[in-house]
Amino acid sequence: MTWLVTGGAGYIGSHVVKALVDGGENVVVLDDLSTGAESRIPSGVPLERGSVLDRTLLDGVLQRHGITGVVHIAAKKQVGESVERPLFYYRENVVGLQTVLEASVAAGVAQFLFSSSAAVYGMPDVELVTEDTPCLPMSPYGETKLAGEWMVGAVGRAHGMATACMRYFNVAGAASPELGDPGVFNLVPMVFERIDANRAPLIFGDDYPTPDGTCVRDYIHVADIASAHVAAARKLVADPDAQLILNIGKGEGVSVAEMIDLIREVSGRTDVKAEVAPRRAGDPARVVAAADRIGTELDWKAQHSVRDMVESAWAGWRHRHPRP
Image 1 (cartoon, rainbow, N blue to C red):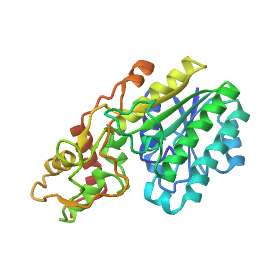
Image 2: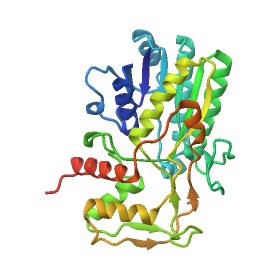
Image 3: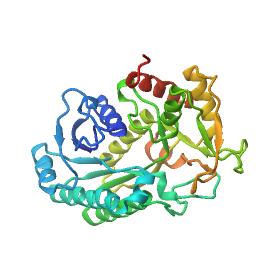
């Protein structure tokens, strides 16, 4: 087996590449390096630089390296940006995926693993979000992920390709400091940035119907995301008829206030108090994964605690932002 990982130089992609390599798999990375970095790719793993929209490049990469399976992670992923630039997101995420699938079918790729998102669910009013919860995405980003799942499933059924669509919940942490999240778009790095600047972390609304009034989310360590991909990849090899849609989460809810308190403790900045700001439009009160199906299908379970996530994320933040 040789796996092509698109977006393999990015935050999540580099963790997946590391986990595959550590598991003894042959891996090739395709990345345009618009948000990724070559330094994140393990030594000895070939990097093909370019866009998933470039069919000629894809055909050459698949042929040159004898690719037998694809892990498609490359995508644009900022919800707010997708609202402002929907055509850009549909081109990059949907047309890009279509191009990768077309090249994969032509090359006889037998396994295809798609990086999806819990954004496909929108604002589910349920205690636990199962894979059967209706999908009502609230942003162009979520729409592109749902459309991607439909496309992957249809292509898999039509061409005898084993497929898996992995719906991530809230990813945090790092397997090592140099692989930490370089972006400041999610709660954990956003709080790091504010406390480093001696600014109060913001809680967007404290009047939700939750135990402490702040939103509740399911946080998953990026190393667990990576190990779930390895388990899914092996399942696709073992079962050529597999057509999987799986949540990757812990099945445990953590409130925004609880997460900020833990970040303050881990960073040693308990002196910086959080402030409450108005609610953000479209924020559901609670989104927590049901993680039963992935356990049954892949014999997989998340191994890292929320504290593990925050401590490793803080080490990654300090690696990129050393104190003067």
